[in-house]
Image (cartoon, rainbow, N blue to C red; front, side, top):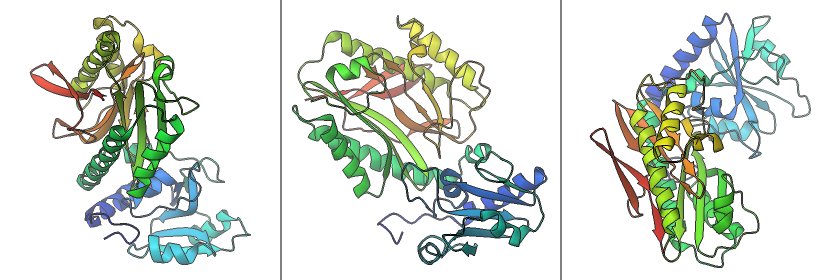
Length: 374
């Protein structure tokens, strides 16, 4: 079991070996002798989610970096961080430690001890080495990543469901945020986006960050949350008392747009193709050009959105890939995280005890979240 929290044990040996091979091929193909990996999402990907060097939550880098060379792999850190990292992060991995005093911020000298004058690339443009983006490596999921994703989606969905049932009129948006944030953190899951909003703020703003609202009739929980580097996104709503017909109709329309996007999420579809799907679906619902009011979502994984559907974008859906669509019509939205695998879509953040809206399209039934009436 994970020594830091009670989590299921996932087999990672094959994944780690495969990613090490892919990293070697990646930097050698670019004429490099080494690759410095500092960004948190890339460290999580390279270590199959076993290593988290995060300290400051808003930071993109943490207490250590990885160095891959043609001969081996290393982790680079400072003397004060080295003991914990050796015991709690890298104990089961074949990385060699390289560290220096915390008051000597000279990463380049540390790297040169290993690679000499060899050519090194880096995934962080803020270093002395040429920038080498790694997002293409992260996009195609492995079977073991999908297994971890299922655990994460189910547990985030459970926290959202429980929190939604516990909302009451008179609660502030800050109290709602604290409830769901606390529930996620208690499961060892880190919220990275935590939006709570109420009543007119939901109708007025597509990204309603918590402010001074007090719940009267209509409440929203919108989260992105991480574990093992992987990220899920979902949104759910509650309405106290009968919901206005106009709002109910918008949720039904958003669900049909969501179904159109899910139906079109097939291997090889481009981000531009999917944007056109959203454009046409909104128009068919009588909300022409609603897609211009907010992004519609796209691929997810080690970023909340690895890419989004937009005009001219050439990103393509892969054979095994996580996606998160979030079509919205003023006051209404459908958002879940799904995974495409073997030509089939699986909803990772399903909430079967909450209301569902069914849409039948092309012989397939798609489910979008409805509104909990309390």
